[in-house]
Length: 64
Image 1 (cartoon, helix red, strand yellow):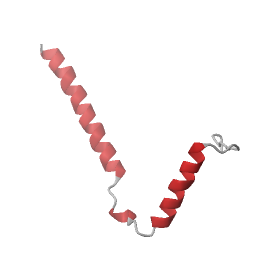
Image 2 (cartoon, rainbow, N blue to C red):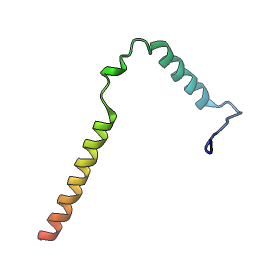
Image 3 (cartoon, rainbow, N blue to C red):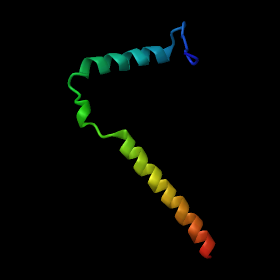
Image 4 (cartoon, helix red, strand yellow):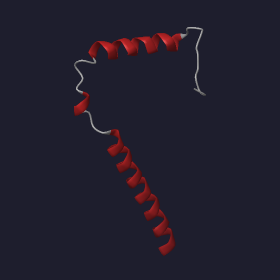
C-alpha cells in the first residue's frame, strides 16, 4: 500500500472516529443496507444535471 497512514498520537479526531465506529457496529444489524439508495445513481444524476446547466449556459451565451 502506497498511501498507508499510521497515526501514533491520539487526538480529538481519533476519539470521534472511535465513537462513530462503535455506533455503526452497534446498529449495523438494524440497518438494511439493501434498502439504502444507490449512490452511483445519485452521482450520475447530479453529473447529468451539472452538464446540462453548463451546456445551456454556453448555448445561451452563443445565441446572444
